[in-house]
Amino acid sequence: MDDVFRALADPSRRRLLDRLRARDGQTLGDLREGLAMSRQAVSKHLAVLEAAGLVASERRGREKVHHLDPAPIRELSDRWIGKYGHEGPTPAGGRDPKTSRAEEVAVDKPEFAYTIYIETTPERLYAALTDAEFAQRYFGGWGPMSVWRVGSPVLWKMGPDGAYEDLDQVVVEAVPGRRLAYTWHRLLPMHRHLFDSDEEFARARSEQSRVAFDIRPAEPASLGVKLTLTHDGFDTPDSEMLKGVSGGWVMILSTLKTLLEREAGSAA
Image (cartoon, rainbow, N blue to C red; front, side, top):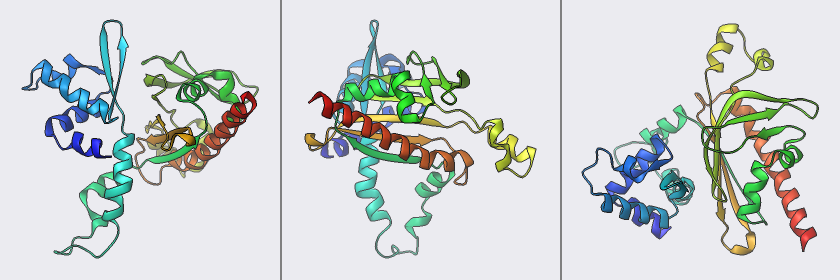
């Protein structure tokens, strides 16, 4: 946590994180564009961010591509900002923390986040998330299939007897052993009954969210791996898609944990 605070203390590093949040998967040259910083300075800032776990990088040919890893910031928020922002009396001046601008933004763009600890390795967990056959076991007969490269489509098997379909989902990030993210499908015709009118359904169908899996070694190491799932990009807190995925992801990840830990126990 100290490394995260130190990394965020510098405005130049915060600007680099903002750029990665706006468009993930950038090279050093991309990030430097338009900034009054030398290539060496940007490189040093990225090294600090990577050491704090805020940025992950991967090689693509001769280039090094950088990805935002928001998990440490989320942990910081849960441990400090959330704790002190919602407890105690209203601050002087009468401003209630519950009506702060930060929370207004959070309400405008709600998300579902869930963390689970699994006794496995980061490599095995990433493989489980990207193996189509294994995914069907914890998704309950359906699940994703892709080549898992940035920009590639994510196809979905809709039920045990269904075929893989293209629902307009694409891979956004794919860092083996670290992070996987892809866009989520929009509401399907089967969801029409949840709305009072065709117009309301049409507006809701324009929403396209995103799911991300952050994989980090657990502390203590005996806990195995810490998996944080974040599903965001919902338009409103009463989004029907948000309601649907919230309970679904808990069951899916619980089943994934059971399968992987049973597998590890058998191997031992």
